[in-house]
Image (cartoon, rainbow, N blue to C red):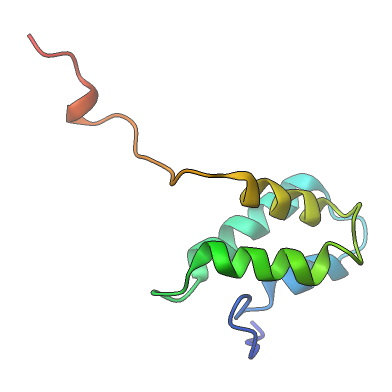
Length: 91
């Protein structure tokens, strides 16, 4: 796997997604998930996401990865865990 000096895309996953001919939305979502899980601890994910969107969206407005990045930017709340003992009825 290629490592890059880009702190917002250290493995180059997003950059490579833009280079894949005929890539679909499902593949882009999978790559995005891998990108999110592989970010170094302490890196601000929202800031990295904004940087990637700014870098690629203007040149690739119709690319499925641009839409995935846009959707990621639209998320205003942190994902929460659902289920577990707190969600069970008491009584």
